[in-house]
Image 1 (cartoon, rainbow, N blue to C red):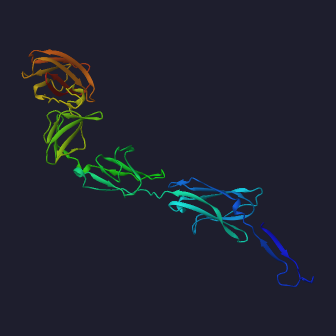
Image 2 (image 1 turned 180 degrees about the vertical axis):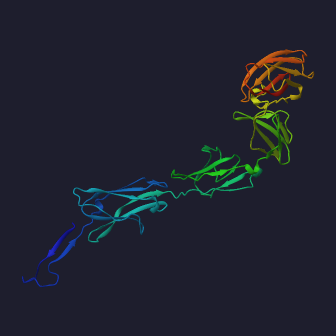
Image 3 (image 1 turned 90 degrees about the horizontal axis):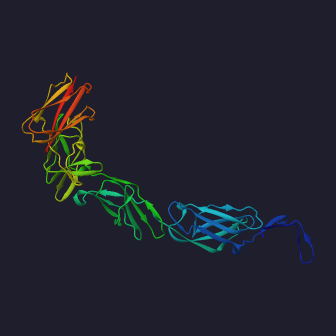
Length: 390
């Protein structure tokens, strides 16, 4: 096996020796390729994108060259074993990019250093996934103008849609209507169990949203208005992560007296959209959520402040006392006087019973110089006035 012989003389049948022939002292290499003694294995048998095929040939002995081929296509570069005794293993790693897709049988042949070769008697079956990264396209024209996401159709695969890493239950085709803003990803899975995901597709509904603008802005109030036509309007205010309807506010314009985050919902041809938010701040009435207005899980009733029903004297305050003058249109009942500093922090609160008095006195001896807001909560009304302490 793989033995070299040197011819140094030629003898004839009658015993004559001739040492002058041209082939004298030439080396003759004798080869034997032991294919039947080889054991071939492969892992994994199902190969997904990005994986490699690992092949092991056991029982290799001597200096032997191996090539791995699929049909007539060479899949791996030549490799050499070392002179090994006893027989050793020869390992190959074939990258995914060099593997044919679909079901295949990998055929080996062996070639030794003399150029002698023969096909192996063992074929190794494996399956290569042909999945590629799906490309997502989007187009307008869905229900209510929403974008339609589309990927090329592939037979015998499972489709799964995700938005911001959350599975969209029931969306199992190569198309999806993007009803919600966010980053969409499509995952496909073939019969081998291989999965591959698309690149994220960002969807925005900015062009579909109602547009609101500020018409006027003062310390006391901000007037907001819908730019487009109002088909079926509803104003909202945000509380935590929840939007609450503002009771009775269904016109194109809205007057905001309190600091909060406001939205407008508009329904056109059966399609409902919520605007981007507008934050109202620095109103003298302060934060909406400090007003103790009636609300439930779905809506809130916002009372309109009546700043002309109370007045403060003197203003600005140069003494240690102020007088709050009230008008006759305030209903009898409990009144809650709340004083806030310029940071919106409560300084003093006092509850009194109102029976038609026209003035109330309060000490300001502990009020540092600055700007203050008085809020008077009466029956079904809120009255607000601003004053300064020198």
